[in-house]
Image 1 (cartoon, helix red, strand yellow):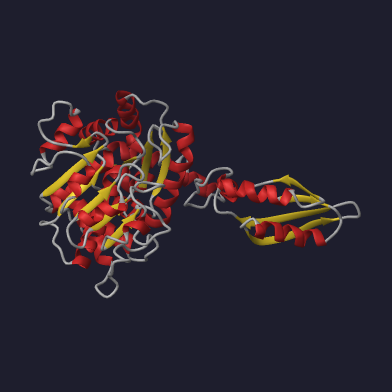
Image 2 (cartoon, rainbow, N blue to C red):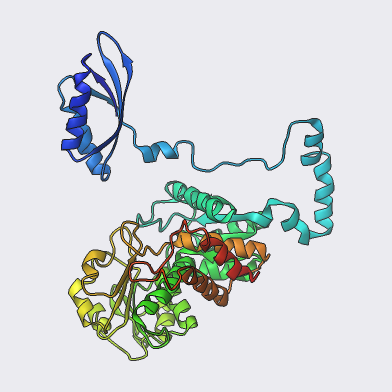
Length: 446
């Protein structure tokens, strides 16, 4: 906050006190201008959230002799001008530099690539470039907010690609939610990229887009909301089962959410050897033969719920070993966990509010994980996608397989050593120095 105050330096102490009383934490106070008529004071403080920030602002404005001139949010300041940029990897200081990087020298490279198209990935940015593609229809937990509003999220994704995988990614926000147009747009830009990361596209549209692009493109197409989430879940579940001494193949699993993430989790768990999965959606448990099922849910029903369990989420939880939530907030009552099998595992991953409060779930569950960073065992896609694309690009892969995804999950799980493993540490931090390279190696095979 930039404050205009009376020319009394005691006001500074009064401001600090007002912020503290209102529950804020002052991190810096600077008098940037001092005169006979007023002081200009810059105050930096931390608040719990945006609403609390307004409380602090009101508290400061209530100090006699203080005018709140301007308020800046550090998160918004960080986004000024965007979070990513393009930099040249080669020096452009002399005419000789220009003659090689651009005309006339670049013409020789272009002609060579026209004669040998397989060298494009080796001699251009394509070999390290990923398009982060969205239509803005399912952005974080914010819903259908459109391509422009989605851009900060896609920029952030690109920054994470670079930080953790050394991959040059670029946000592609498409102003259409028509499947044909999205598929065609990605086809048209594909020659400039070594991989396509589909992001925040609503189900069931995302299924068709991914399937059609995989058929038409010779570069890997990876829908992170589906496959990145599934890999993180399998990695966490592998270690959670190690903690409680159960096997993947013999565990009963309940998945809450039959959308993009839920479907991908089911597919990967089945491929990894799980045989008993029951899926719960907003209308109840998904059961094969139900005439009201959508085509996507009918496909899901065909490979799940072998015991034909019917009813709601609580019915599915009876004697289940694992709950995995990728659905909606506060749909699981903590006491229901007592009705699960011994040493139950609960992954409540809805964001920002999970299916059950992790602290409440921990009273009954042997292992609890969520998508939140303020609780132990955060299952975060950032563990996955930088290494996945690093490995795909290194291998010059044309697609990504279920087998590669299983290997990636195993690599993440194995970063946690036997000595480190416990109920509060089943998954490594995204900042762990080994995790991203381990995933890349698992994907590329070398």
